[in-house]
Length: 430
Image (cartoon, rainbow, N blue to C red; front, side):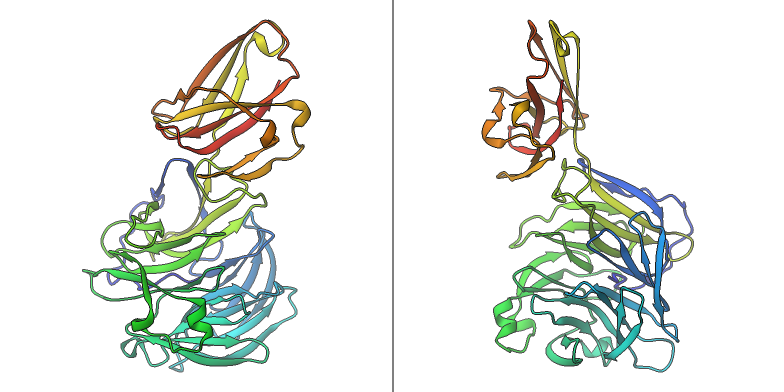
């Protein structure tokens, strides 16, 4: 989706082409050139993604190679958003108009099989859209310009209709919809360099279903950020927001409600122009110290001059290795952990190899989702914690008189210094 909330009043200087974005421990950043600069995008369930640059709609493989050109528009426009339809066979693209005529802004249906692009209707200066559980597309737009505030429309795709269901002051902001149907919206309070507090508000699914006209008075403030919220996206369960600062770094946060601190997951040097989540196939969640083949965050960033990159944020799982004579007979067995929680703890667990599954199972524990081939009921935990150093490394040596070979599988759980576990390593056997 588009998250270019406000084009910077001062274009960034050229600077270095290699930006130094950072993330928190337990995650990694992988940076590539954006395959379609100045585009909006959405993820598909198979890991592919679709881009719209204002003219061409293209489908890409997860590795960034072009799979298909799905269509194009006859006139170049300013791309707003791309959303996968609930049926999964098409995307809806939004645009906020072209250079002429004004006001303008349309919605189009684009089939994923490449069979064509169909005009749906016009919603001038649309900014963002998101499907709810009923199959309707909720769209934020400023048909009369930002000075007249932002309207929220409920759009039915087939047959097409657009119904005004809400209005808030100031320019258009991003929308996101939770699984239960609640609508989240990023209020835009100030267009100056000295931005004031920016609220993320929520309207409940029940309120929307009741037909009540949505406005600021019946919205619940969910969180408040110091800078403008340019994009809102859910991973499988939780809300994330990007915020852009005119002067200084730009950030992506995990949004927590009711005045709780919303932790910064990414700090970027340049403007964050788009954000989406993608799945690499496994049930791993977007949390620190999870396997990297589950949910990933992908964002685009630009200096609006020479740099336009795509950055993938993926969890990094701690690594367990074993060595020593005891792995094949009598002698020591050394269990080495790398990539754990810095200055944290590790807990060694084991399970009989006869009870290991051929693929990892997913167990929701209080603080994290455990991915393991172990049968949980047959897993034994050591009765003591091993401290990890500043790099998250730990080592434990056991002596065996023989007989361990072929007996168990082994895995570390990793956690904070107080023993609260928040992740796990790979499992090994010998």
